[in-house]
Length: 259
Image (cartoon, rainbow, N blue to C red; front, side, top):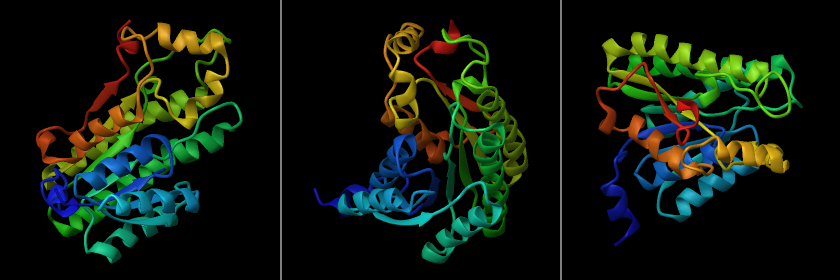
């Protein structure tokens, strides 16, 4: 079957999507799944080369994509990314606020700037553009299972970082409020809360056998998750399959937070 025939049956056929942090990990998986499902994807990342590689991968598979360097800590950059989608394809249907950082190498201010402020800018200006268009839309925010809980790690207090916990909890609050604001306009705003997922962000933790065992043993399913498993949830929330779902969050953690 030709690529065009496959795309014509996609759940996002005819839609346009901005994905931040698209250059690796969950963002890359979301971008490629969206492309396969027929969306025209703007792969946005602070690393221009990685964003371009993802866009090329989508096009090689028969999809349509472009890439853009975006620093989500800059409100003007985020506004520019939204405008770039409109300039390229005439409208904005989907925003995935995926860009995020974590780890002791970052300061409180740096984590909050990316994980909280960046999501806020994407919701604020994405919602405004969708309201202006008057055709509805979907915004998917990336929180974390650490946005709905705290944790005690084997290495000491602070969970996985005070700023990380605070920022990911904030994403849930932003999701609820923007979901209320978007509801009358048929713009759905939801969040995903991944658990321990095999991505570059997890690599530093996996260098410790003790932490790796702790992550796996804490999940009733007994394994780490895959980026594609999160991407499929993002597809659900971005598509009409979730037409009556808004202002809420979906936890994808193999049961970790249910313990």
